[in-house]
Amino acid sequence: MEFLQPGTWAEALQMKAEHPEAVPIQGGTDVMVELNFDRRRPGHLLDLGRVRDLAEWAPAGGQIRLGAGVTFTRVIDELAGPLPGLAMASRTVGSPQIRNRATVGGNLGAASPAGDAHPPLLASCAVVEVESVRGTRLIPAAEFFTGVKRNALRPDELICAALIAPAAGPQQFCKIGTRNAMVIAVAAFGLALHPDSRRVGTGIGSAAPTPRQATAAQEFLTRALAADGLWESRDTLPDTLVARFADLVADAAAPIDDVRGSARYRVHSLSVMARRALAWAWSDYQRM
Ligand SMILES: Cc1cc2nc3c(=O)[nH]c(=O)nc-3n(C[C@H](O)[C@H](O)[C@H](O)COP(=O)(O)OP(=O)(O)OC[C@H]3O[C@@H](n4cnc5c(N)ncnc54)[C@H](O)[C@@H]3O)c2cc1C
Image (tube, rainbow, N blue to C red; front, side, top):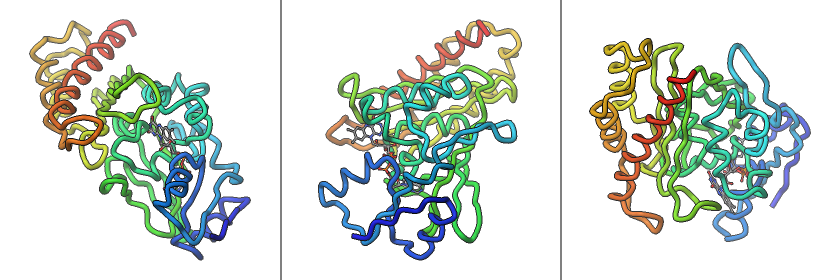
């Protein structure tokens, strides 16, 4: 196996262009497991650990540009204010050791339906910035996941960053696992209230072949909050509205039975998480 170790982003893109089959490795918390279990034996590994730009985040054009190599620990320590949903999700990833190595870019690269970064990125309508020697593409998170562990990257492209709007309102992330820590989600749900644009964003994890938005649920709630003047009044949400939102979130799932949970349980747990996330987020909004 050839080990490629670019020192700059330009070199990384050049190497990926020359070896499109090369497997990028960032924190290695997915890639090394696959190598250790002999699930993968690539001809080339492309180590991105020395590309310093990737490990940076910065405000850019009113958004946070989160480099693909920023770890979950740094999201928690440095970005819990502007990106509360992603920080909540980051706290649930693996263990401290995993969070110190594992990155948001690696989560996107792996594109697991259970990746914990995905629901908050979907709820915030984040955009994935990918690049090759041919140029840059901006892919909305909602279009990035194309199948089980598949994403929209072309063979010569690398993920350079996620562009995420700083929270204008409350955000929540809920995850159900078979225990409290070191656990892959049985189901997960992310919610973002956007009072500035009077919109609601959602993201479902581990309950469909890809992470996805609960489109009908977010459209229903966006319409209902506007029609009833609730953004302005901040009144308590009617139970019927919350229940309908939860039902629509559950309807958006297309889960399977597997070792972690049954499809039926996943659908049920999503409706419970949706109800709770909305209640918590709305209560935060009433106090804002
Ligand atoms: C013990 C353990 C517990 C875990 N718990 C969780 C959990 O609770 N929640 C969760 O979501 N995940 C969990 N994971 C999975 C893993 O930690 C995450 O998916 C993590 O985000 C991967 O990041 P990484 O930097 O280590 O990626 P890597 O392993 O380096 O790469 C992951 C994938 O992304 C690709 N890739 C990496 N960087 C790029 C790039 N810049 N451009 C294109 N492709 C790229 C790689 O080729 C690979 O396919 C766990 C893993 C372990 C071993």
